[in-house]
Length: 265
Ligand SMILES: Nc1ncnc2c1ncn2[C@@H]1O[C@H](COP(=O)(O)OP(=O)(O)OP(=O)(O)O)[C@@H](O)[C@H]1O
Ligand SMILES: [Mg+2]
Image (cartoon, rainbow, N blue to C red; front, top):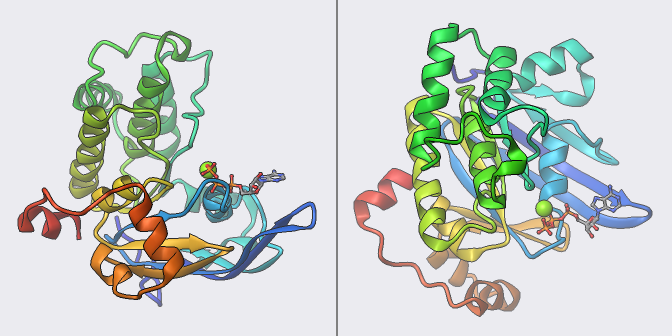
């Protein structure tokens, strides 16, 4: 179920600063995500995208600033309250981060057992249905070590969404996948999220993935989210760095129908 807090926001980040060993990575990030919103955060390698997601999960603390999920400042919560809040969040980590001693099925069930009230039958049914939807119908009994990197990534996405989270955080969800599988996976994420009504936040360094994933993209540059908009809106800012970054990989929007634009809005 979607949250209804006073501000009606799912994510509220205010002036988030983070340095590692004296080197500033995030220097005043402001970000708001509303219920049902799909947003990509786009920035070059090493600019702090994973750091931002780790901040949202409370895995790292901000040096200064505030991070709220579902209207609650996570720094002010006790462990139990924070865990209860995080049961509403699905996270697909950049490297999959599956338990290597559990099969694929057990990895996904483990998340559901901890984060949902589904019956055993419904959980099993969901594991098999979702694995089939990412073209991995026969992977349930395999160990992560028996899968390719791309397969592990797809399992990680299934695990993040199998719990019907109000918010799903996806770190480079399609890195290392071939273009066809990448398109299938993004489509699958949208279908599952539409069923659940989840808000989605995807971080990526790929211009194409960012705009395929969401029509609105926020740009992370020099430690801040410096702009947010559609491909056209970002171009119309005439900011030399943003224009260069958007154009350098040769991506051009197109090939998507108006109906799809509405679907991904
Ligand atoms: N625990 C840490 N200790 C020290 N430096 C770190 C730590 N985590 C990240 N960094 C540094 O902070 C910067 C941002 O890292 P981060 O992983 O957030 O970037 P990213 O945008 O996710 O990169 P990529 O696109 O490669 O995934 C990098 O220079 C990284 O080396
Ligand atoms: Mg990263």
